[in-house]
Length: 129
Image 1: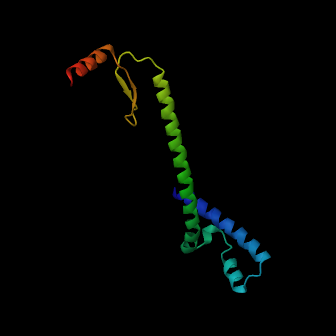
Image 2: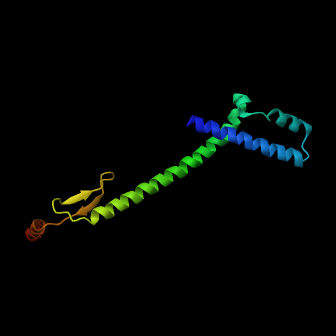
């Protein structure tokens, strides 16, 4: 993950250099600002750690956004897969078990009421249990 963070920070620095050069050409900036910016118009690898940290802040923001979106896609894929598996299982004829539970959530997917169960329920109701 650190390699990705550094790659994004380097990309951010390249983006900043293009933006700053464009701004220096179009705007009337102070000579002091232009001088400070020109000193930073170097490859990312030559920046100090403190300077790199400024680009890493934006890399971290990008990583957080990417991670959030990827997590959401993974959760949606899991929900879809569970739903498809439930539908597949529900379409099967189950003779030798009373219930089927989702192995991940333990949610009841299928429950078979057998003739003996019906008889036992009727007896319970008649006996007031």
